[in-house]
Length: 421
Image 1: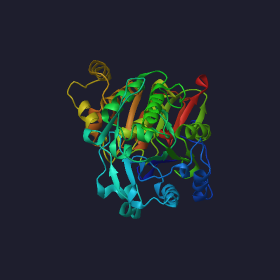
Image 2: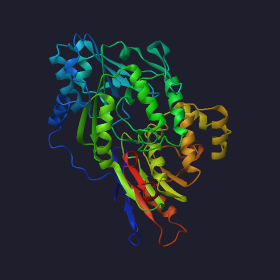
Image 3: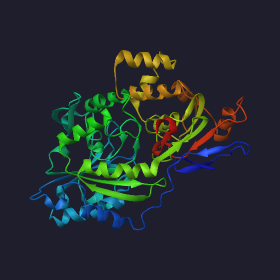
Image 4: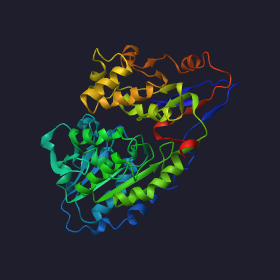
């Protein structure tokens, strides 16, 4: 098999005498004409909202994802911009706001990583900074007590649009809708308080309606008044399958069943060994993103089993806060991680250490990456030199009837055990 790794693939030699299951998004064909699908979504929005209904618009803010999300902006944005220009809104009045969340702001020289170069040259572009309080506007609190501090450049626009993709999310249930704004353009204080809800038992992969973390995000989006969402559904090859546009909540309600059809996979019973790839670039650009591949693999791995985490991580951990937290001399065990996390309270960065420890404490994690082996060990993970060497380690001293699974796109897979169905 070929396993996604960074911008390339690794060859995996599987033992011929053992049964191996592939747990991956369903083979969903891409749309034959993506532009027609996008234009149709814009012309037939869901919910009681149409772009043409917004009159006398003097300014527009469009929230877009940063470099860690595989959103096909080059295809999505031209039809959207064409509609806005039909409303006689000039290019100078339309600002792209890059939703970084707590990731470092993207410098201008990287803007063309997420936007076509011609759009960077012709439209205003700003990159959100979650730690710059001068950029943020206070909108009060959610019912969960989350402070709503949102990017001013976005809030000051007459028309607020969000562009993104809808896919499974390990504790929000699903990405998409208002999330790119409610989290991506929020203060670190907002994100910190919201993400603390991830420890709630109902904050789970594939859960939406009764998911407290996700519904807190919806409350933030409602307070912001996100006017219009343009969301794409991608298949396992990151090709456009469908597009939904309109009222953000209505978009989620229409898209989620389709997302399940693509990404939800029934699993009869847990496995002894799971080979889990985040799905390649940009999902494995750093540990901060690739951790989701561990979390999703853990759902179908037996206690005491082994997960081989295949993630290039060319940008290392992806979080200075997480890395510094783990490099503290006291972080020598998963027990130490749990004890400190409980003592200090929820903090973005430290929460990544908690998420990894939560799963790695129950299974053996062999990590194949481009990262320095010594750093990987300090993160309490076990580095390996090659994929096949990892498999050999995992299969040492196991029974002949060992159950093995491969998750080539774990970040985007909802593995549903029969007992949970």
